[in-house]
Length: 408
Image 1 (cartoon, rainbow, N blue to C red):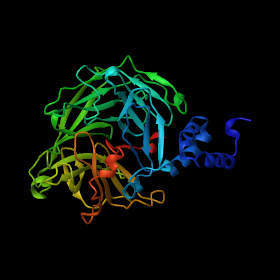
Image 2 (tube, rainbow, N blue to C red):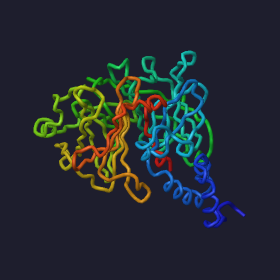
Image 3 (tube, helix red, strand yellow):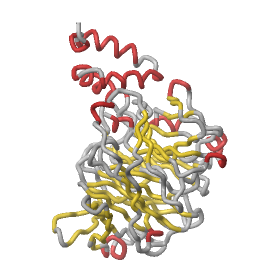
Image 4 (cartoon, rainbow, N blue to C red):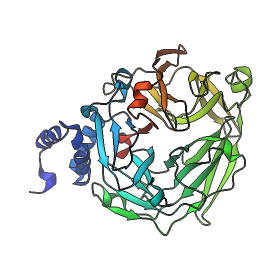
């Protein structure tokens, strides 16, 4: 009897027993690589149990593992995670997870004895580990930097995949670096634990004008985009024949965003008063979330505004403020990440048209507050008033959003 001869009814019983213990989720992911029939059924189970992002918790030194808080919707009602609400995965010795994107972790060494330019992309559920080429000499992964990365494909081993990493240099400037890893057949590694290398590739650092102002990056409709503190968009183009990355501004009319509607009440582009994040909505629109801070506390959210990029005229783009998301969805806004989720029977604890967000108050990434913001009424449904003391004590720092649903 072949594996694909097993009845779906029997497979369902097997998969149900696997997921009774949340720690076995990685075993269910391995079932994706057995055969086509197993893959389809395993995807259904995975979607049902992991439809919303997890929180990657702070790692204690020495770093031997990474822990995820899997019930994000319950975070506001508890001061510490329970074993039933967490998943833990082992890491390479002395490495640390610096950022997350679509189910992948960016790993680097976090020990002065091992401080090198070596880095990895790691899929904790499948066990696939991709060693990236060394970073240029002036770029290093830094626990206090605003590190973020995005990839153009669901798997970085895809032959057309490009990786973009955002670095913060000494807290004063921002640099983007691009890399095209060596292609590897994605299907051949599905469900298999393996170490891959990409030594023949290298990082491309395009010259940036005013790069210190870049606040977020996103891959949208086949292009990489960045946004700066003034809500100016830049698009990045990759020339495969020359391995050159070039950037150019996207002409966006922003007068109505800032002057007419007075979004940045503390002054246009004031770094201490607002920051911009990009996210793709469930309906496919590019959204900008403008987080406005309290004038007395530089990193405490006072207001949120959401704008949609209108692309009706290729020569004239403009941002327009929205108070309703088109689909039944909510936004989860971390300090470095933003994810749109569907509010459905699988996410009954989330409310539609709301922004679930986290604040921080220091460069070390300490979480000071969390809250839920209703986009339509422009009011806070809930807002913590404990200054995050308990959560700080429990090492709730440097929150990163991990999207397990991006893995399949």
